[in-house]
Amino acid sequence: MSTNEPIPPHGGTLVDLVMPEKEALQAAKEAEHLPKIAIGRRELSDLEMMAVGALSPLTGFMGEKDYRSVLEEMHVENGLPWTIPVTLSLDETEAKRIGGASRVALVWDGNPIALVDVEQIYRRDRGAEAQSVFRTTDTAHPGVAALHEAGDYLVAGEVRVIRLPEHDTFGKYRLTPAQTRAAFVERGWRTVVGFQTRNPVHRAHEYLQKCALEIVDGLLLHPLVGETKEDDVPAEVRMRCYEILFDNYYPKDRAMMSVFPAAMRYAGPREAIWHAIARKNYGCTHFIVGRDHAGVGSYYGTYDAQKIFDEFDPVELGITPLFFEHSFFCRKCEQMASPKTCPHGDEDRVILSGTKVREMLRAGVKPPMEFSRPEVAQILIDAMAQQQGHGLDPRALASPGNGS
Ligand SMILES: [Zn+2]
Image 1 (cartoon, rainbow, N blue to C red):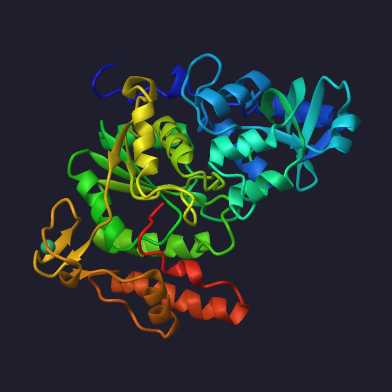
Image 2: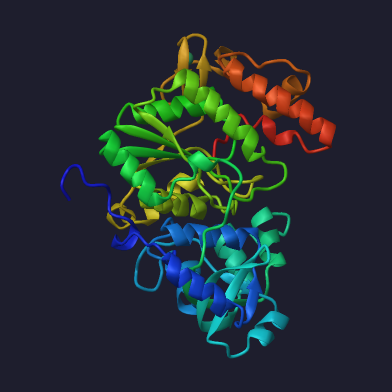
């Protein structure tokens, strides 16, 4: 690898499953006569990620051997690290209807969006999948709950995509891995750190992004905009927060923002690995893993998502994780710090509980500027006022600790 060449994608090849226009037109016609499977939002996210190469080297939905191997070994059968099954679900009626068809059309919003060459239909092992991926079978876990809503059967096969899903949001931020890679090269960035988030960026998150940026050439803020649980902050609100931060506090030649179309699994440690691999495909050389990455409730230990990286050979992962502790502003240090760098006690640190931040925002009060940039706080206060008007759950707007 010469010094200005981007990091190789996972498995060596950046996948592109989108058919050329002429082929896509033919495929759309063919789809009219094929058995159809209507897909949901989560599968649409996976399909889009696979189509653009974010899930390289996957070129289709996993067969049973890979599925088992991912659950049991955290690697696909050929030995490549992989921690989250990427599957296409069917219920029993659909499985019977598809029968022995060798090709099916995936339908989204009434239109055929992709063709799958069916290699196998097999039964999902729901208990093993929940326990392996989520470390729990508790249906109160949002990932386990989604797993229980999904069908009992899985269709495996190579995918060809007729058209990418259309989005009416975040258009200019929807860069494919090929596009982010090109953007990094254009900026002359040889090393790039990716930051995953599904929450507003408070000072603590800004601090660790900038700590990371001190040692690499560029920062990719890569917020997840696929499906999240209902009490997570809506993506539009988060994007407004990121934009104002970028405008005011980030150097334009060192930081860029793009969106990550994945749906959240809340699989904690395994999802941290999966997020890192996907960011490698987007061209990142480093990836920030904070406390409780992709966690939910108290299903995972605070640093489990960092510890899991020890179970992989750094070479096989190919992207360097950067681990961070909880950070805060310390009045004695007079700066942002973490337990690693600050010797003082909680009485000197600006630490607010999620409950406290929510109360403040709900009352229209900005948290201290050492906790949250006033511009960000204002967006959250406005969003919370609007949400309360719509009866939505305002809980997540605070989320002081977990940036991912
Ligand atoms: Zn201190």
